[in-house]
Amino acid sequence: MSYPKDCWYVAATRDELDGAGDGFTARRLLDTLVLLFRLADGSVAALEDRCAHRPYPLSAGHREGDLVVCGYHGCTYDATGRCVRVPSQDNPPSGARVRTYPVVEHGPFVWIWIGTPGGERLRPPPATPWLHDGAWSSVGERRDVAADLLLLHEHYLDLTNVFAMHPEMVPPGIEALPPLEEVEVSELSVSYKRELPKAPLAPWEAQVSGLDSDESFGRTETGAFVTPGLHKQTYTISGSGGPELELVRTHAFTPRSSGATHVFLQISWRGAAVPPDAGEQLAAVFHEMASRDSAVLETMQRYLDEDTTPRRYFNVKADRAAVRARRILTSMVEDERGR
Image (tube, rainbow, N blue to C red; front, side, top):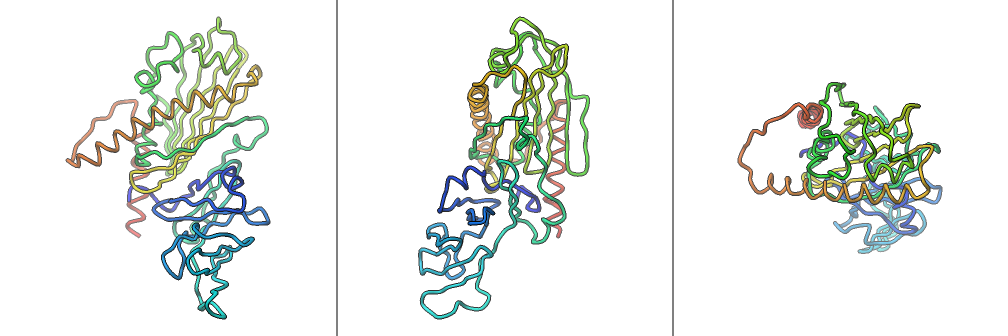
C-alpha cells in the first residue's frame, strides 16, 4: 500500500450525486468498492458495494426510496447498512449488514473516511472556504490518472516543470522561477511561497483577468500539501494597488489503488475586472494543463511498474517541498502498518 487510509478523501462531487437522481454513484476508493447515493433528507449514504449474502455489487441493483435492493437475490439494505429484507424468508439473518462509511459534504466535495472506524472523529476534513464562499467563482472536473498518489503530490509541489511542459503559461520575460526560500513544514503538512518579478501578462492571463496587457504585474505563487487527500495552489497577480486577480487551484487526490488516483480539480477565482467568460477560459486552460500533467505522470508510473530495479534519483533545490511531503506520506503509511 502506497497511501495512508486514516485520512479524509473526496469520494465524489455534489454534482455527481445530484446527477445520479434515484441511481447510484459507484467508485473504487482506497481499494474498496463504495456505493454512494443521496437520501430523501438530503444527506449522503456510503455503503460497501458488495452484498453481504453473495459477492454481487449492490450498484447493479436498484433503489426503493432510501433502501438498496440487490439485483441478485433481492436482499435489501437501509442507509445504515443493515439488511432489512430477504425475499426468500420472513426475517433477515441476525447481524446481516454491509459496512458503511462516514461522509461529510462541504462545497462541491463529498468527503469519505475509509480508515480506522471512529478515527474520523479525531479530525475533520480540511477546510476549503474558497469553494463555498460567494466572493469566489469555481469550475471543476474529475479525471482518473494511472499514477500513484505520491507522484501527483510531488509533481504539483514543484512547478519548475512549467517551462518545459507549459511554456504558454509563463509571463513574458520570466526565464526561471525564483528558488524556494520559504518552505513551512508541520507534522502533517508542507507549504511554500515564491514571489515572481514584475512582467507583462501572458496571453491566458490577459484573457481571464481583464487587465491591461501593456502593464507589468507582480505574481505570488504558493503551494501546499494540506493532507494526503488535498493539494492547494494559489496564484495572485498584483498591481500597484494590490491583488488584481486571485486564482486557487484545488486538487483533491483520492487513491483508487496503488498506482491509480482519482483527481477532483477545482479552479476558483476572484478579481474586479474579470470578464463574464472567465470560467470557460480558465476551464479550457487548466483542462489542457491537467491533460499534459496526466500524460507525464502516467508515463513515469509505467516506468516504475515495468522496471523495478532499485534506483536512487537525485534531488534539486526545487524539490524541497516535494521531499518533505514524501517523508510525511511515507511516515503515515509506516505508522499504519505498524499498528
